[in-house]
Image (cartoon, rainbow, N blue to C red; front, side, top):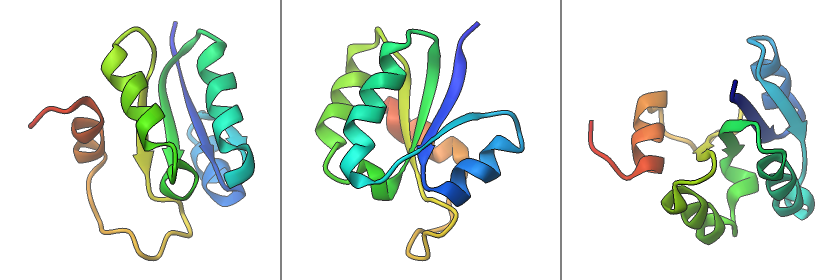
Length: 101
């Protein structure tokens, strides 16, 4: 069975952890290596990464999503992200998949 993983700051990982999502706390310096490690496990179906950590990784994220052979990588605002607009999770998933719902 595929899993959902979250890569983000401590507060966001803790919040998602309450619902059973496995999380990895990282900072910008470790974001790329943590993303590759989670994807490399082979059991990820969805990888959620906070916008702050995804900064600079958009090309790699798009490559992963377009390949279709690995997990879907979705960028979401973190708990402490004050600049994020309020959007539904469905809109983030649709954006990651490149579809309109």
